[in-house]
Length: 243
Image (cartoon, rainbow, N blue to C red):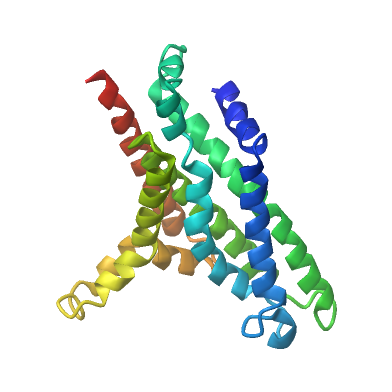
């Protein structure tokens, strides 16, 4: 299982696309935080990184499917999935190894954003006048969100041998689970009845809750449950070859 984990990480960084994906993510975030006039922190007048945590989920919808699209699709296309099946590992162990590798890459992409926190910390008046609790709570929320999107992306990759199709499916599912339930809750048929329940099913509700700096166990349980659900779906999808 460990060998598969390192194989996934090494294969990501052995290709140019790995550096491009992470580089584009950091470039876009830097543009939003320091360049674009509507979101420029220097013009905001308040030492905070709220814009980082508002913008990153939308970027994650494309970044993480780009990371995960090759996890099983490439293995199936090249036929190496059969070699994996001959290893003394269960399907679940293979899935978990690829999932944790994807989460590791997401965290690796997020680590440079800590420099933004340091910059805001130094720019505060006085120095250090920044809500650290809100930042770290939001940062944990981003990691949990990235883990959810990684589980969705790995599942999408297990459905097809085409990486582009896997990417498109993952983007759609990430968008639906993040924003789709919010949109559904606004339907006239649901407003005033079960709109709140529908909204609670979506990721955005729990991500917004944890981004306030309060790490509620209910939100953590929701994220872990959603991850477990898509890992189970992936396990079922891989089991199709045995049927």
